[in-house]
Image (cartoon, rainbow, N blue to C red; front, top):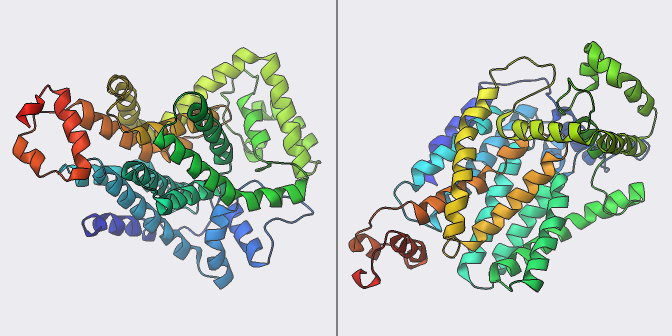
Length: 431
């Protein structure tokens, strides 16, 4: 951990030199819910506000209770990101003792989107920590081939709290549970699948109190939040000049074209209670999808571009911030795609737990792509994507390893090293 400490200094410095007092985007909403929690409730029952899950407001509630400056709360991001990098470093060490593990961890910790959002009271840095922790504990229990109850529980808690922080992952949990369960029952009773099922069950148990709470408010079963309707509405926009990205009411009023296309509908649904408003947005979106399926498909392609490269956006000029995502993600996306074939060819030696985590990423990305999304909804998944790329390189793109070096590899690391030597044709008797 000490060797990674310069990263913590960098993170703290970035927050201190950017002491913003105004709120940006969703920051105000998280703070408002945190204040609500200090008064004994999450959302007023008179105007139900389930736009965000309670995970991050719970983290902020002590600062609201103590009336501490929100800049102090932002310092938590430095520690969240630092421990995300530490977990990533420890996960790599499960699979190799290469001298480059530290360098790769630094490269991961200096990923530009991480640094860009570190001084905001937004969930992404915390989510990156949760996913990194989930990855480590799931890989640990899968590799150990023991009961590993502690790691199962921690992985499940991380996954469950991830859904409470970004409620979309609640649907991902259920989908992963269904996929793992079906494969386990009908195709192969694999140890890693069994662990994945246990982790998903623990995660769902963590979310159950929140789902009971939303049921008490709305009377709807498995109700996670009321922002999905608007996300789908913008994704399904049928107008040729619009690309499927989210537009705020201020943007609608300021742009004549957006106002002409959407203002009347917005003002109409604004009179409805929040739950009914969400339903109205969803109905209109489904109508537009059925009526204009090709336009929805075009918007979906644009959405993939926004997820991966923060581009394109409707009625927005080119922006320098796009390079924060485009340059690093270009390497991640290209290497990720190129890694699929060797991973498939050598699937017997590619760690199954990493393939299971990759399925989790695919399900999450595919689901996110169906509604209006932004790049920050993809980069929180990069701990898993980066781990996949590195382990594929370790298994498939290798050089001759002298036997004396192999003797120094810990027993827990030798399976990958042996597989790597198989890949380059080193006979077993030479070992």
